[in-house]
Amino acid sequence: MELMRLILASTSPRRADLLRGSGITFQVIRPEVEEWTAEDFPEVAPGELARANARRKAKAVVQVNPHRAVLAADTLVVCEGRILGKPSDEEMAKEMLGWLSGRIHEVVTAAVLMMPGGKKSREAVVRTRVKFRSLEPREVSDYVREVDVLDKAGAYALQDGGDRLVERVEGSRSNVIGLPMETVLPWCEDLAAGEI
Image (cartoon, rainbow, N blue to C red):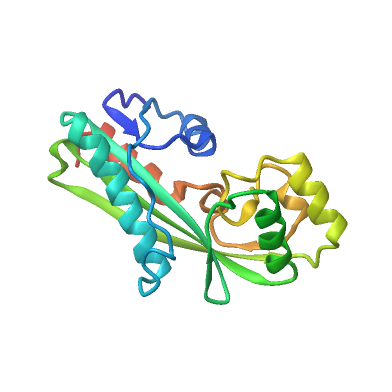
């Protein structure tokens, strides 16, 4: 699918792989924004926090590329009311994985497609339930040692050995990876057909 005017406002290689795997042509531009965290806005619901971050990323890139469509996303992991972003170090990653062990959590991804000039956009917040197996401390340590976890919400990635941590996924697997393709692909098809 030829979408030369689409920009992916993300440096996530996983999001780029998902788009590329669907045959979408795009350019990657890093959004120059600081992501808001649950600590910054504790009163904001996770879906709205993710949506605000995705909008800010898209808007930042549209402002410097006003004639291009921009796709942005933000992913959070929520477990029993606690929002888990990206861990700052390996110890925090181990703590997050220990917390998720044996529990069900929700992966919340907000996706925003902003049209040239930022005048029109499509937005969605997609939720997927994930159940972790009960993990031994050694399994957690091994995973953190073997996988680069510091750029991943909740300190794990389904596509990077995460299947060995996960008992089941209810909903979109691509959402857990970082971009709900069941939602985003029809947007891209509409964009390619000039229907947006």
